[in-house]
Length: 198
Image (cartoon, rainbow, N blue to C red):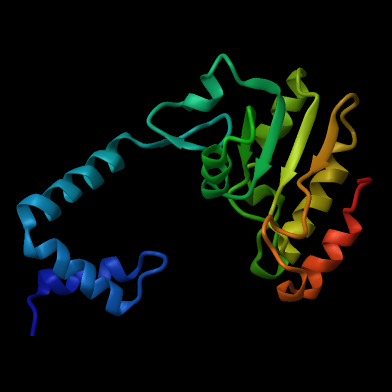
């Protein structure tokens, strides 16, 4: 048997995405083998992050400053706003280095079955940006799910009232290095539907 503290550590680790009970036990054991070198620095970093990290009131990103470093970066093109579902999506686009504009993190997608409506998402600050002017394009980079498509259509309808603002969406379809015979029907249909001249 393990002590209460160890069980609590395993239980908390097991709640993290991608960790099951077995992974949580393995990580806990790894941390506890050298607590001064592994567990204590991790605990300090977690505590520091809990105190320092804030949600950006402009875009919804997580950072140690509000507004975040992306929103205050003078090199960013503030006229192009990329709308994403989660901070993880924003971080993925930043890691890829493919967007030099700013972002809007919705914090999820519309889901009537789950009771998530427009008022539950971070849409108001996006509309505030558009009201202030200066935005020429909104890129909808939402997931290829039913909820993502529902949110995208709702946003396209809402954003159509802003003159001079182009609304675009990320392309969907065949991934780089992907073979057609292993893709699902929905991905193939999206790829053919989004075709462009060669």
